Image (cartoon, rainbow, N blue to C red; front, side, top):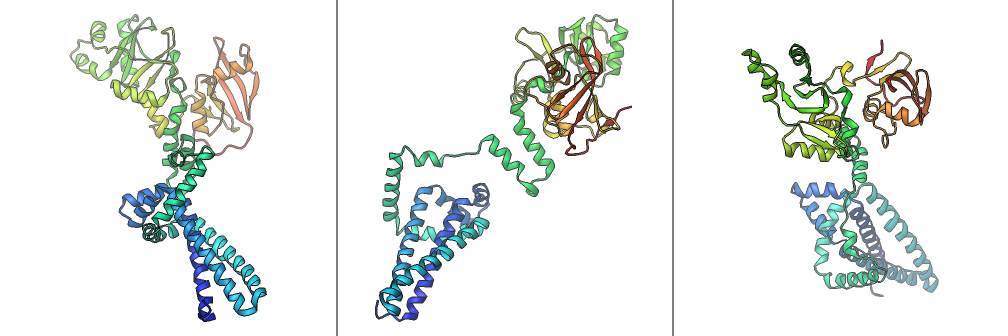
Length: 430
């Protein structure tokens, strides 16, 4: 070593510092690189991404390789610096050189490259994958020894490397990833993806049409009245019952009534012969599960029943799909039913409107863990019979009862006491 010119030693030292910067920066880059983007690039045929993905499949082995190389480089840099110091000023020079090279390694070999790698991980991780793939084979015995020792130490503390590698995103983490995607995913698509994830949070009671609002055909009514109900219907499928919805006979598709109606043969008996057996849904069924049930049963409409078999409401396939893609109609007057925006900024809503619908259409955060409708929320908070003019506060919202019918809130005026996040597009109250 004494025969090596001083200029060459300085050059070797600079190369060792650069190598330290590479190993430190590439370590950070490979650890923070987006695994899902890396997987996508690997599937697209990017060879560097495939190599990086293969290295990251055994994180402990990769870290052993990097740290082995980085430690060797840092030790060599310290030795060369000491030799340079001895050449220049003896023992004092060696001490000074050790301090200087430690500072240089800290700044140029650790802090700067790791910061750069954290900001641009793919730019560093992908080229580094080629280097580590080449180094892995000749250094495999040493890496295996280091990895084995590290695993043995982890087992003493009850940590398994295999368990640490088997990680996946939870639903909440996936929701955060989608919400923070920014411009990478259009806002409308973000809302749809988040709505799909939210399906498991909601049940059929959150979106069902309550039993008192179910529109159907009453067989106990005179036939001309039934016929007018068929003509006036805005729905393609109608429940048919005798006297009350509890005496449900079935569901009829209006398309099946066209031929007998044209031929003049449509009557009550003919209507009954065209009925399909009703499909019942247990209360508490999550929306994502009911979506699959509709698909398996080849149904588009179902009736929510409680533990006693009483019908509570009606749910359709379209109702669940609207939870994902939004209302199908673009008419603001019909997009949010029974909800009207007043001139003072308050919202006039029917008591049967679900809290989930209000939150989705207005960007509110009314509690949905308990009652499902505005009427239910008011009754729970009041713990008394409602009366017109009574006011109550629920979180950041003030609710004023406007009209009462049969001991239930028919309409109520709701004010959000803070500025709304967005201007709702609703019909104006008259």
